[in-house]
Image 1 (cartoon, rainbow, N blue to C red):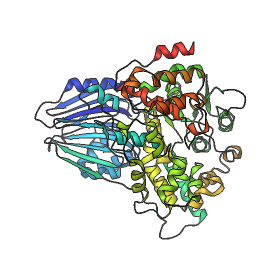
Image 2: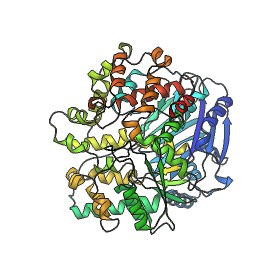
Image 3: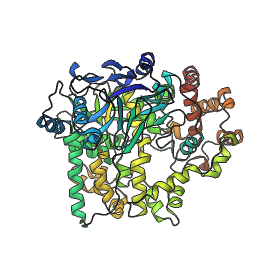
Image 4: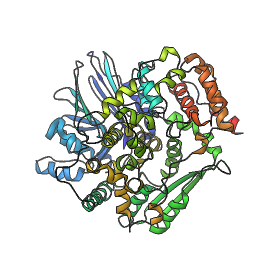
Length: 607
């Protein structure tokens, strides 16, 4: 797990090592263990390493194989690297390191661009082929590892974070009006290849890109998700047996690949509790970590799930650490979290992951998390509601998912930023792609391959890596997701959703956790905007920078500020619309305008 960056020139000039150094410096928190650069005429790489597999200097990057004339920078983990290494040894390759990075180099030499189909894991990497003067870029199937791009007639640059590209300079930072529509409709999800900035794009998941020094570009999709029933129907028992086998393989045989201790982020929900249950006998002295927040007072929703995480920790006798975060710390640390965001993200999980990761990184370098299970196995409350609706696939989806309808979007944004209903067009195209048997199959495929990439997968990479912590997500093992995509929807929705996971948990984890109501990760201070938090958002939205930018219609902003907790001022999935507006503006002030992170103002409010 690392931070990578690079540049390929198209104009015959030498690569800009100063720009590489600036990008690498911006990525330093992703890889605190070592740093390196590499250049070869028009090509340059930078790398920041977090040592997880083969801790020796032999596995440092950029990794250069002089014999094969290949150079690599890689972020992620290839879980099946040992099997691939054995296969490559049998083909006659020799190795100078013991890790997964060198396996990528040899695999590319042996199998070319198709090597990515053999990789099981999370990855974003770049390979420079000295023989052909070509750059090969690749990203994993679910976009767990990020890869941002900026390109013009002179060069292409790439990096593990958007702010790293901005640090290199020369980026078109004008806002993309289409991306803004996506951002405000899909809970800050901006599907690849777009970002909110016109000059920055993302390599889509499950995609490779091959570039030549004259600017030639070839892009290919190497994996898609089939959401149809198998030719031979399976019984419920067969589905459950297959689910358990696939999850055990994903957890025990793959996500434990590390030469450092591995822990679990234990929320107290079914998914993370199931991971602990599967690992308790495999990992001696298993470490688990939980976080909770201060309640807002009588009648407010509970802001922690310690009742259940404590139960799991005691049941499996893990070495457990629990962190209770006061609202004063949430407020004080918000500027840091926004500064660390590679793209603007409003989910409450973002600040939670930031604060939890800081603490967890002091004990382990790798942790497993339950993200993805709800999207893959049908755990969210809106799925049955969508399914019960009538109308087109888009109508059924949007009524229970979109943060705001297009009419409200036009009311919110000033006319200069008005576009057509581009998000509805994108969603309709995605849902209506072939190889999905039912409406819910369409939804879950769209969730797994598009929406989940930016929410929650992006924050699971972004926030922990700000502290040099690698988080692995077994429920997004692609073979497990493929299995789930073939399941009948009624099996997933049985007993309130996620039935296959509930069923295989029986007898393994306490029934109290399996049968508990579905929980969500609450940070009440960011949902019920009051006191200092309201004043902070008011100051952002009334700032000179915000007024000059001219994104929002003032009447709409005033309406939210006057009644932030009015029912109509929450999104359909219970997010604060006021926080949504303030967060984007705050992110732009820090990352695009270069303004201070409002730390002093936050401290004043907290005082």
